[in-house]
Length: 361
Image (cartoon, rainbow, N blue to C red; front, side):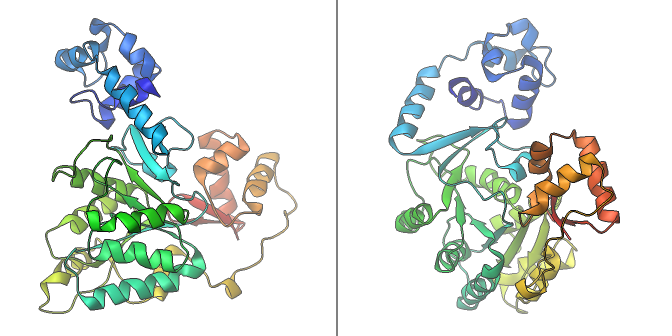
């Protein structure tokens, strides 16, 4: 993990260029042993960045971080690791390495970000709690940013409803910001949720870090719900990112004349968010069905090919699976798998869900 974390710390090498380097050099370690002249051939690198890589020598800082992680039960996942969150891996600017304490988002449950303004109304907090309570039967992972207002309410309500909840931070895991949420963060980890960041320990909660944090919130989920937000602010940035990442975006309409909800109305008017008034709206958008209405899993039908039987077996005993997990289970190549899933969907044997997830009909 030494070279993987070092790659994420080279000045001016962001996620996209880091992935170019990995594709060209083969591994993170190889990046640091590739000559300056060869590095210049990597798309987007050039002379200055090749020099930054060739002269990087701050491995002692990475070794300190690894010791800190070991002493504080913090883990890291590199972009190529199997445990790296599959939803996040889909976005073009996914971080090359992430740090987390506790658990990562469940791979088998839907993931929803619930966000909004820090200076929210009491009504917005009540709506947040009611919707999360209504979602509990569908067992989603609730993701937010651990900020004041709607974020904190979303995490607290998820805990009260025994749902996994993940806080995405704009700083390192050596601190919690705001400090008033230390106990809330501890409760999230203790209850099977976690804390998640792309920043190494020692990184302060500086203003420029939060737009980066927002893209991770948008990338980690199948859908995002904006409860209350002015026209300008982090929630609108996150919603726009989620829209660009092809996530479902939902918004609670704001009251006329209340600036705290104008951003939600703007998203709806721009056709970037679905209007949501109740759990039924969310159920419709997420293709959720009440437990009593869910059809039982079918026995394996006749006249399936060998490859289709592999897909059926991979989906038989789970609620839903992401296409990447189905590929790992079946060992089919991505083109063949996509074609077979489409065929099974036409035959009404498989249902496609948001976030490239599939389940048996």
